[in-house]
Length: 312
Ligand SMILES: C[S@@+](CC[C@H](N)C(=O)[O-])C[C@H]1O[C@@H](n2cnc3c(N)ncnc32)[C@H](O)[C@@H]1O
Image 1 (cartoon, rainbow, N blue to C red):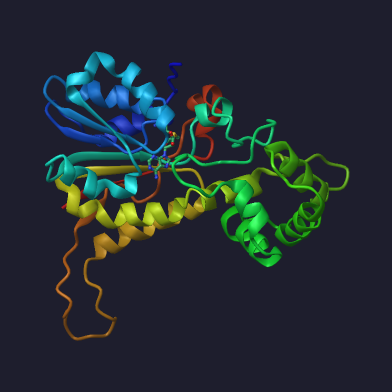
Image 2: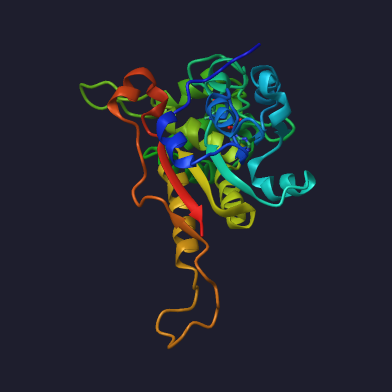
């Protein structure tokens, strides 16, 4: 099986990565290698691409897709939150560019058979890394009603979180909820249809997002990743992050802001006592979003936001 993806914001990412021949670049989310192929072309003939993905399918696929460049590629099946450790293990002190394109891939939704889509009858799994043990079905069956409601509310920003949690708990007492379609039907039945209208998006969209975030600990790993960036970037090196929902974008924005600020002393002190200097600078203040032309051909880009910061 070989899959390639249309990368989101391809021109914008490429422009701001600022790559040159000989650079060492990290793609922390290889997916279908859409961005990776562009990155590698820019760093040839003697650059190195470190391609990371936590999904074994993506790594196996990248081995095929990137075969023509195999002397310039290092593939790592791991979580990008282990970036420092990965670089150390490969005797690399710092890199020129890091890209992460968060969330799930088209392959995971359409072909992985792991229940990422509410339109498919698949096991309710949602693990991107199948070495982990906790699946979406485990969460659905083990959390208390209030914990489920909180999860849907905080990670899915789901208005009807309490009703949905109540219905799930009533249902699971009699029948296990083991497939993506089972769960989608329960959520759809719990959510009221707007009078005289149809739902704009599938009513299970936010619950599926919340579960995926919880199964893959997406916000924790993003925070852990952001905490390592200044230590692994060369001076003037750039990190580019594409996020797809406000919870991720908030983490990215806040952490870049903290690095820009440097000093962490409480306001009102006559002088700085912490000694922290600014370590990163945002390349632009507002996130870059997709242009109309891209949205016409790639609906995945609809909610994508790109932020880029450079090491100072
Ligand atoms: C949106 S896709 C990336 C698409 C890719 N940029 C392309 O152009 O084809 C996201 C990929 O990142 C991987 N991924 C998500 N979170 C990850 C993490 N914390 N560590 C490593 N890989 C991750 C997923 O398994 C998936 O393959």
